[in-house]
Length: 247
Image 1 (cartoon, rainbow, N blue to C red):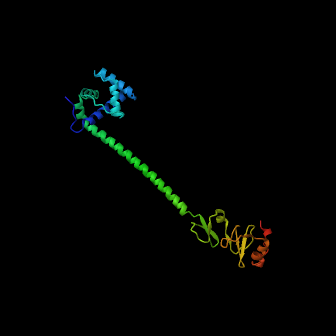
Image 2: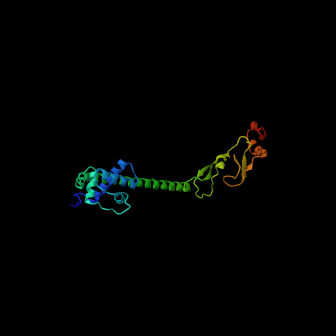
Image 3: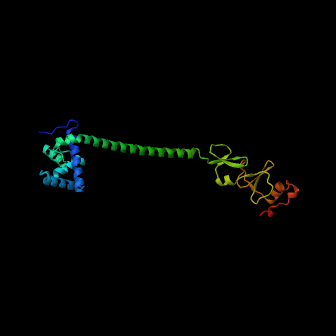
């Protein structure tokens, strides 16, 4: 009698399930992984235990058709199907069909779950990659357009700002930014002081370079400048301070 498809599954699906279980069991029993080793083990086992002859080449073709998908599937005869089922402790193929429908469903669900999990992992990985790229792009945009890489003079010191083309802004110089201060109404001369005199107004600074407003080169404070513009205006009781007395 010919073996036709089962009620819930096509015959091809049942045969596929049968082949997977046969080779899975053979691998566990024999501990062999190469195709030839498994095929040889099954051929010997079927001849010795089931008194049924299936040669090594036939088992190799089954493996390459149903397991490794290297070749076209070769449909087994009904007698071979029955014997394969007996190897799995079933009475025949019909018995395997009845008992295996539920197991096939479970295996399909497991495969689908694995597929979905892998798809989900890929989606998560892609989301992370996209997130990192967006973060890098945003960081680049912020660093390029919002980084405070200029400075502007405010009252008596520099403050950092984002370069925007203001007339009195200048490129950030960390040393100048930290050291340049205007000394308002100095009470004594320091060894390192610089000044500018514009429109009969003199201003003193703590660092050399350019005047923060008019851009003129600052000059070092000499003893004469100190005497005229710092010491003389002070109370006469404090007028004995000079550059030579400063440590």
